[in-house]
Amino acid sequence: MNDISGIEKYCTIRLIQEDAEAIYSLLQSERDPIFSECVMPYYALFVQSCEEYMKTNAIEGSVAKRIKDIRNNIKAYADRAGRTTRRIADVDQKQDFQFREQLRFNFMKKWNIHYNLGTFWVQDKKIVGNTQMLNDVLRIEDIFAPNRGEMELELGRQIGSYVASVRNGLAVNISPPEICRKNHAVEIPFYCDFNTNRKSKMIKHDIPKEINILLLHLLCSLNFVRYVLSGLFYPGNTWVFRIQYITTYYAFYALSKLNNHVQNNHDSDIDIFSVESLLDEGKVLFVTDFRNCMMHYDLHGYGVLTAENLNKSLFGLVENCFPNHSYESYSIQLEIYRDKLCAYLEQYFDFSGVTLKENT
Image 1 (tube, rainbow, N blue to C red):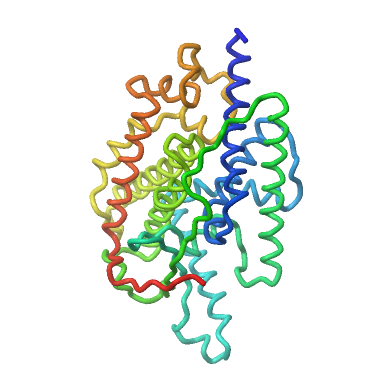
Image 2: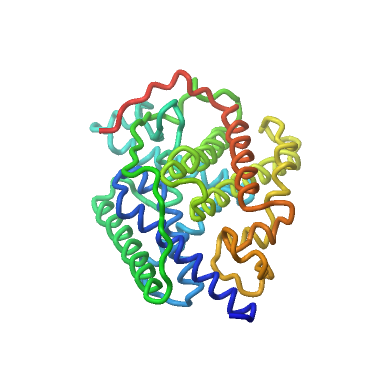
């Protein structure tokens, strides 16, 4: 295979195959329902990106639309800050109404005694998910809908079937890679419920509720990859790298949008901690061509592959997009930057007094 177009096509197919094997491994071993919801956007990203590249519609109807929406919602909080906060406020209000409606007596629905934000945790009080973010990203209109279980089951069934078909189809012509797993059957063992209408000791900084929830969403997204997903694979898994890049990039971009909003609205009552130096540090890690390769599978025409780097991880995508980095050094730098984003976000919260309960 000498022509660059043929090389790009082969590498694209191989990347799809590697990701399919990693996802299939998770589908075979992971049964924790919270994990399944947290990882679902990245399964949807795989399906939708494959469909786009292969120009097929193997999944149709309402499930196809939902998968597309879920995939697009990965970057939802990197929209303009005003639009993002309105979106978050709408979800919070909707969750508030749905939980109020679950109170047994009508007169109790006027009381502020319900919870409308569930949070999920792992050891050492690391928050890795929350219900408002998951219900928004997964497009769950009513968490108490009688047919919700059936809808989630059908979504999972079609995604699993699609991943298996891609995996089996590619294996006919290309030997699949071996996926080495570090752990199996992960559990997200703890939860804690909150009422966002009340002041909480967990919230350290006096800023609008929608901003606090946004920052919590970003922290949950980063922490899920940091403390849950990464621990299931040995270092070097390229699908995990892809997801880590995506979550880190969109957290960086969301903070950039928020910072721009604060700077451009001098009469705003939003007072966020200084973030400019952290954002400047992140700019060198994110370039457009590389981001496109992480969100899509089509490598044709981007000029991101060269013959001398094809034997490297991701076929030299990192080395060609970041001349001063190898895949290994860039991975380390990305992890360091992700951890700095987490540290920045954690400034807004005090989790020391949170009382966790065990999921049963």
